[in-house]
Amino acid sequence: MIGYHYFDVQLKFRDFDNVELTPIYFRGCVLNSLEKFFGEIGGKTSLDIVKFSVEQRRVVFRVPEEFYKRIHTVITLIGHYQEVPCHFQVLKTSRTPLDFKKHLIGEDYCEED
Amino acid sequence: MVRIKNRYIAVQIVPYAPVNTLRLNDHTLSKCLLQNVEKYYGVYGLGILEHGFRVKYCNERTKIAIIRCLHRGHRYVSSILPLITLIGDVRAKFRTLYVGATIIQCNKFIINHQRQFLDRMMGQVASAKERQDLFKRVMELDMDR
Image (cartoon, rainbow over the protein chains, first blue to last red):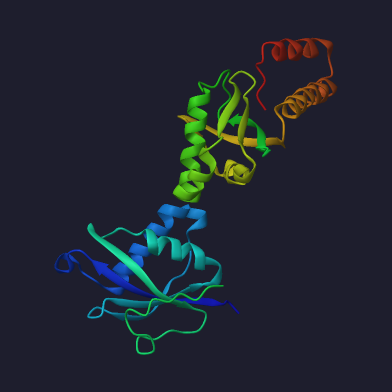
């Protein structure tokens, strides 16, 4: 059985009005930067979006366990989303499924290995 | 004192169409390799490899080159060598001959490798005339395999 790692990410944009925030575009953005930083061999993985909220600008997604570090790096390094300056803040990571309700925004906590 | 470990990779360039000389130099070769590392391992791989990377020797007549890189990054190069099909503007592939820790060991291996090739080819040739021809071709470095 493949082990997954869950990420709870807060999306922060400079100009939210010019951004079309959808799960597909977000996934594309993360996978594109993953390929840019780690290349064709190192940057191919599956990324499943578990929860997505446009109002709260928050996403919960999961990736296979071996990609945990790479995804964390890439999420931190992303600086543009649809050419709008942005930054993604990892609120929480966990081996167990995450939910918006359980963890409030601003709870700055990352589970370490 | 910290010792910097290097790895020297001896490669043979096998062109798709037989040619006498490859129009290749150190610069073209290193550019091609770094481009491919960036393609397959991204900016991260390129960053690890770039420091200490150098094409130390490139002979366009014998089609043999020696690449130097740091020990921690040598797998990034050796793993992409079989995936490369275009070097500069020449259609060719790489054959990894040897990976060593010193350039002297690489040099020894290349000399042995060429000697074995010559012995093998000489053994296959039947007539004295052909043998002379082969010897002449080898001396002129006009041997395509």
